[in-house]
Amino acid sequence: MIEAKAKNELPACPVETTLTLIGDKWKVLILRDLMPGTKRFGELKKSVGNVSQKVLTAQLRAMEENGLVNRKVYAEVPPRVEYSLTELGKSLKPILDSMWAWGEAYKAKQ
Image 1: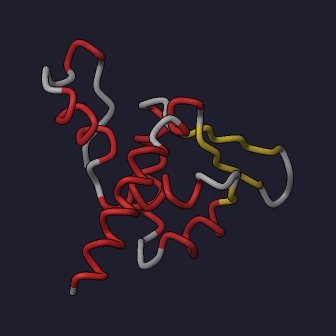
Image 2: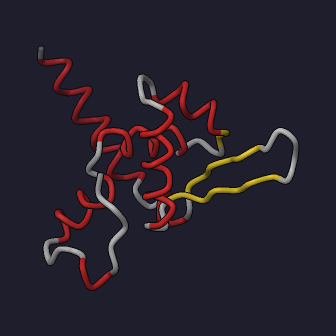
C-alpha cells in the first residue's frame, strides 16, 4: 500500500503520480463504486468484492489522506460512517471511463 505523500515527495512523472494515488486494484474499485454516490462501509465492502475489512479500511484511509475520499461519521449508536468522493476524486471519472472502454474492447476481442 502506498501511504499518503507530501506534494514535494510525489514522482516527477504525472503517470507515476496517478499510479501512486490510485494504482492499487482496491482503490480503483473503490473509486468505481463511489462514482454514483455515497456509500456506507458495509455497502462498499459488498460492492468492491473479495476485500478484507482491514485492507478496505486502510485503502479508504489512504484515499482520504490524499484528498480523494470524504469520510463522514454520524454520532449514532451504532456509529454510521459514509464515504463519498471529493471533487478531486470525481475528477478521476474520465480515467475510469477509459479503463472501462478499454476493458470492454479487450473482452470483445477474446
